[in-house]
Length: 316
Image (cartoon, rainbow, N blue to C red; front, side):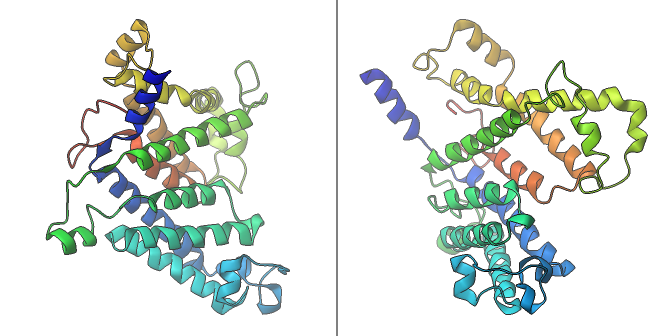
């Protein structure tokens, strides 16, 4: 038991450079900018978040505390909320006031998500969760204006804790796993109809364009359906494979066959080679808001970095 506890403590005490976290910061900053700027520029923000008495489409008896602090569900307050989100996003992208920018961005995302549940989705929580975790690490230590001001260089190899990156990676795995199990139906699972993707691509609320031409390729949509489901429900295997891949594989009771398998086929590479094209496919065919942008931002956490680029990690 003591050995296991020591291994556990050692696992969470590792440090690395801030490259991966910086890339999450920049990617999430771009995602936050899109989330706040797109409804503002398109003009739909008033209809979605402003109270009916001021020109919105629905009345609000109560509003989140942060919006209440800004003045309630009025055009001026909602506009301020979006501008705070846009300002936080820009600060995250350039790497200025990293923790504070992540915190204010998280407040904006939670306010948006809680204010009108009919105009939100899981992607809002995915963004807010990432921004909240970025509060607990110096996310602007490299690839940032802050680094330029403090060190005279845009980059820095100053080590930071690996904990936040691992928690972000855990969030990605939990997201895939939970959505996979929510799809346990005849439309998704093997030996069922496997028609979920086909029907999604025929719904105007989801599809970018008319996909009736896929009728000729219906078996391909079935393969995409079952492939997506397997990828999501098997996501926890990534974490197991990463533990077996490290130098502490003996402490994690990795079997010989498991070690041989991850030495031949890197679980990180397999995960990225499936997940990244899947999200680009979603972006090209479906309108799911900033979901894929948010999810792809988490992929930077697949690797710990001991240099300013990806390295072959000795631990997860």
